[in-house]
Image (cartoon, rainbow, N blue to C red; front, side):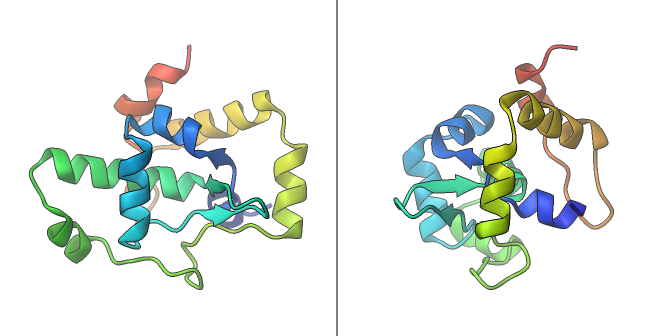
Amino acid sequence: MNDDIRRNMALFPIGIVMKLTDLTARQIRYYEQHELIVPARTSGNQRLFSFNDVERLLEIKALIEKGVNIAGIKQVMLPVSRESDDATVLNEHTEVKRKELTDSQLHRMLKQQLMQGKRPGQVSLIQGELSRFFQR
């Protein structure tokens, strides 16, 4: 599975994303409403977030902490549509892959994303925010 597909794969429910980002469910829904993130939806309408969604939420949080308002964030970060390459993917193939992942595999994938650091042209996950979830 290539890196782009894996980074856009719907993996995390909102509860996990809340713990990873230290944002409330209301804040996360607000950013979704403003099209700054586009999580996938299951058939039961549950939101599932990707690595890219978590990364964008951490970027948004960092901008908010610097005093940037939502209008400024929209200027800096282009809105995401369901059809864009950055949208979280949830289809039959990715759903099967997600269900095959054990918690330890998911943990290892997240840790790998943290340790890789900044990718060319992309902002990295804020390691200081997420590293507290991993023991070295």
